[in-house]
Image 1 (cartoon, one colour):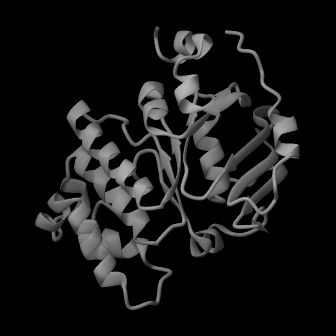
Image 2 (spheres, rainbow, N blue to C red; image 1 turned 60 degrees about the vertical axis):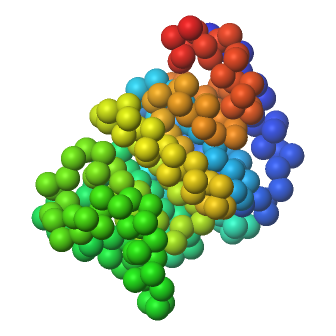
Length: 252
């Protein structure tokens, strides 16, 4: 597939380093295999920005780098005006970056409530209990089953718990990796209703989602990643009507 590559690098050069979240010229390789090359991204406070692309394009790798689970070899990451490229994953969580990983990554032998408390493990304020009640209001089924082991939940309930756990860290930016994966359509609708409500309340969201139509329909802007390179970017309403995007990712 051949998509006209927009000059994303040139766009980066006009960006203000004080932007809420930005990536500059980031590259990452597994040995001799280049997984990501010269990635440039900007996310403004309060936006929901989507990243779409085929399996193996490098989407999850990019989120793992943002969370400092992987160390990139080139480029810079900025958050709230600060270069965080060398900061640890713990420090990034403290600064306000939280990720809901692909596969959810729950502690299956812990209760729902203990999983939520794990999301707040770096906090020492007096609002943890009230924030937990907020999560229970978002996902009432978690309140009903709060003493159950996480491993006994359905796939949709586990995804709710994974989102709730991330929110317990009180993030300024929420990274979502394939939140619809493996879920029934009706559950996906419930999850994305919560995601949209979070954005309306001011949470900045970076959404990685293989369901390109859903991602573009929900987000403000989007980037298209192909074979480790960013090949398109723009407003989601425009990309969803782009002929090449329709052909490659929307099955139209």
